[in-house]
Amino acid sequence: DFAQRCNPEMIDLDPCNEADRDELFGMIQKHYDYTGSATANFILKDFDNQLASFVKVFPKDYKKALLKQETNKVGK
Image 1 (tube, helix red, strand yellow):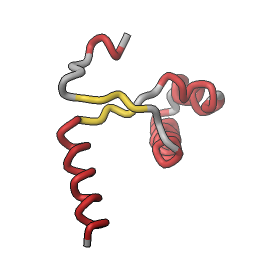
Image 2 (cartoon, one colour):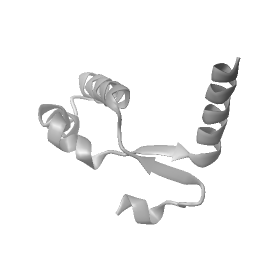
Image 3 (tube, rainbow, N blue to C red):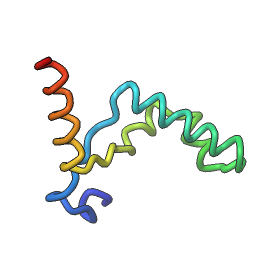
Image 4 (spheres, helix red, strand yellow):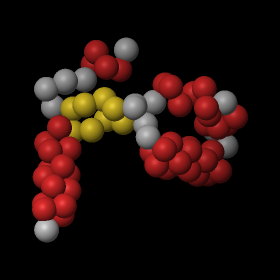
């Protein structure tokens, strides 16, 4: 299991949001177009179901920096 091999002190494993979903689909589509990968084709054809197998790996320090940046924007 992927989550068990990660360091939870350094990263969060977040579900994919709509923007992540679109970007992921595009990346897999480009990979398929370039390589003809059978695995990529399988994922693309069943993307809504396969999406549950993906997570966003988000470094905690980076997430804090983004939140701080967002807070600073709102405060101005």
